[in-house]
Image (cartoon, rainbow, N blue to C red; front, side):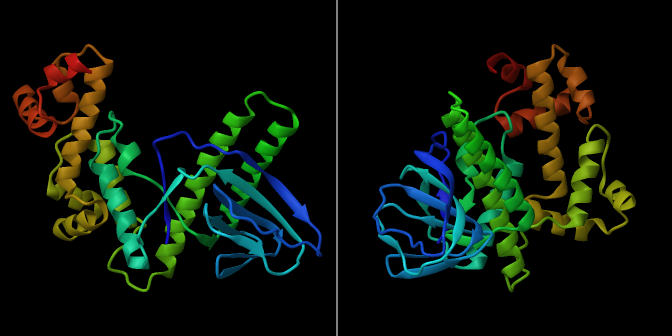
Length: 302
């Protein structure tokens, strides 16, 4: 079962550092009142939580939960990073199968593309998922190592901003772990019905729309540019992004228009021309339909 990262509070840690123990060491028993994240730098950590035993090797991570008994069950040399976090850092979420988790990631992606980039809604709708345990990709673990070393240096130098350095590092590491989780789930899934990783063809459509949203774009123009049947590409795009090509283009243009409305004193007609709308009337109609208020009112209240 994975865990939501709560975005309601800045991530905090009571203590985070690196430990190294000899071959005759075994983790002591305890029931913590906080989450403990272990990431193995070298050696093996033999640890159990309640009745479940874990054997963690280099590059493995484990998230131990508050209120659960854990203890070492075998002696071994181990070098690991650890982070202690308060009990409200995560929220367990009932996703058991790979398909359920992949569908969750897919919905996250759809929410991102449909969201208003000028609002705070993404903090609530896009919460990273952290697994109970997994093996971390080599490149990602190298990144985590460098971040944890920053923390140890900050602690050793008695930096007055040590706790803020910890919080910054925790967020960076948890996002990194969540991305690894996406990659692991995608590669392990037996079904191809849902894909978390974007198709190269969809990436090409996104790049094309980003580059040419100011111009008149038709289905034929997309076909010519990408050398593919538009209807097929549109179905693929909707599966990956959660909306059709022209629905996405409309949102892209509206969001670009919002930038001009907020950060410039250009006339509404000028903004309409710069963002691919036919004229000021067309812009006003589409903007009001999508946002709920006219461009002029939006400019005045933001």
